[in-house]
Amino acid sequence: MTKENKNKVWGTRVKKPTSKLLQSINSSIDIDKRLFNEDIDASIAHCEMLSKQKIIKGESAKKIISGLKKIRIEIQKNKFKFKTEHEDIHLNVEKRLFEIIGDHAGFLHTARSRNDQVATDFKLWVKKSANIIDKNLTLLIKSFLNKAKKNIDVIMPGFTHLKNAQPVLFSHYLLAYVEMFKRDKKRIKNFLENINENPLGSAALAGTSYNIDRNFTSKKLGFKKPTNNSIDSVSDRDFAIEFLFIASLCSVHLSRLAEEIIIWNSDLVNLISLEDSLLTGSSIMPQKKNPDSAELI
Image (cartoon, rainbow, N blue to C red; front, top):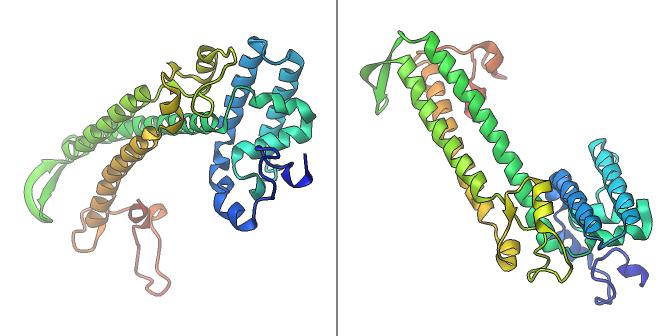
């Protein structure tokens, strides 16, 4: 292999090195390096499957897994050097693996393409992120319920068109947000069920002739089952759009709450006061206490 092609996965098919301009456009490492945990987890599961199916030797599998774990530690300790010329997190990890264990690293990509690798990593990351949001919503609901119990008899004005409309209980107002957050949690639950299929093993688009075990990798990675169609598996990004919708709608609920806090805290309404720890000041007007914490939401 020629020197200029050593850093690429497509071998000698392309005769000239990639231009610097194309590298700058094609590289996604500044964004997708956050997928390093998912990429390494999926690679370890894939490697264990290859060894179990006797597609690669156990010695190679042990070296690969050991090298991947070392790379994870390097990244966690900020000792890993991400390189733009390696485009993405997948190639950055792979190239570093070659540096650590040599040619054994080449066996890791057996029966796998970057297409199913990317789809798997991305789906794992979205699943993790959705679960984090779900847990935070649970904590938020508990907080609202506790606050409602402590203010069960507190009366406040209910507003329409920013005008005093009807008296309502503050607890009743808080429970309105509980309902919103409960709907957010239901959407996340349905979403996690919808995406609980593993694309790994679909390869580029038409699967692989190797005798792989997709049920094994699905169980290892926490998926309910493998996906049914390889073409759809590598092209599907429905889950990303659905996740963005759920997160956006949840953000709308939080933004609504924050806006009401800002209005209530304003000098015109003067319904509530906020702790100083949640406020900022002005560089020119010393009397100001600004509700920036709510404004940022």
